[in-house]
Every structure is written in structure tokens, then in C-alpha cells.
Amino acid sequence: MTETKTFAVITLGCKLNYAESATIARDFLRQGYERVNPSKKADVYLINTCSVTEHADKKSRQAIRKVLRINPSAYVVVTGCSAQLRPETLGSIPAFVHCSGPIQGPDSRCDTRFAERERIAEPE
Image (cartoon, rainbow, N blue to C red):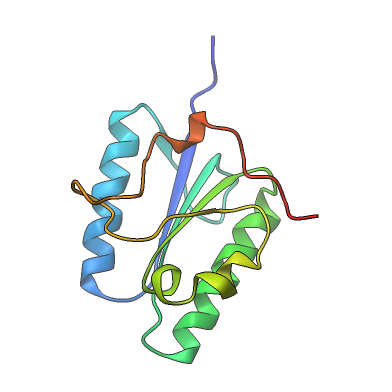
């Protein structure tokens, strides 16, 4: 018997981010994942970021670091405004999967099946 994979969602910012996060959460549920509170250990974390203000950017970085403290071996997908506008800043945080661009649709570069892939290696 295999253990059910878990996921958690952290959404910062606007109503669009909340709608996109809800859509991705439904995809995870359809794939058999169990949703857990972001403060709990999860196999996968989705962080939908905001960069409207410097404070919002800071909260986005803090969220990434927080989930990596909770589960250093988790897959962390970062999307949203900060991921699109400041990939170099977020890219300096080791061990997460960066996903930019639209979350859904033909131009999407975000695949909710990523958890079956190998984890990105930390920079040396």
C-alpha cells in the first residue's frame, strides 16, 4: 500500500492568484493528493506569489524559506508575479521548482504532475 501524497497551498496577493491556486488545488485533488495546512509537512507546496509592494515580495521569499524549513525535501512550486518579475531573486533560494507564466491553458509552464519528477539539485 502506498502512502497518499500531500500538498499545501500558500497564496499571496490578488483575487486572480486565489482563483489560480484553487484551480491547481483541484488538479492535485483529482490526481489523488491530500490537501494539508501549509504549516504541516507536505510532499508538495505551491506558493502563488505577489510583488505589488516590496513587503509582498518579502512575504513571498519568507513563505518559500518557511516551507523548506518544514520539509527540506519537499517540491516547492513558485508561481505568480514575484516568480515572473524577480526570478533571479527567488532563484537564489535553493531547492525549489520555479514555475512562471500562466498556470493554466496551452501556454502554461506549470505542470502539477511535477512531483513524479526528480527534485532539482541544490546549487553547489
